Length: 115
Image (cartoon, rainbow, N blue to C red):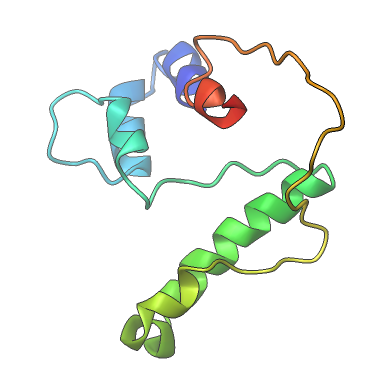
């Protein structure tokens, strides 16, 4: 989303990608938008992928954020630390044989997930 905004939001009549990204990510303190802000902020937009298990993962993030603001969970935040069960969510899987996983260096976080 960030790269798409940077590539497409700088034309005539546009406030510019830097301002748009600062507003989306509530990063008003910086002169220029810094992509690392997204990685260090838990209040960033949730990527929605409407594809079966991916939508379950997005819903889990939405549910967690909504629940974390409710009075019961602000009083007992540890209740959400174990996570939330969402129908359609893929759990842990075990593989019967070794596999090779290819990741792209520009896909931040993909290598960590693969390990």
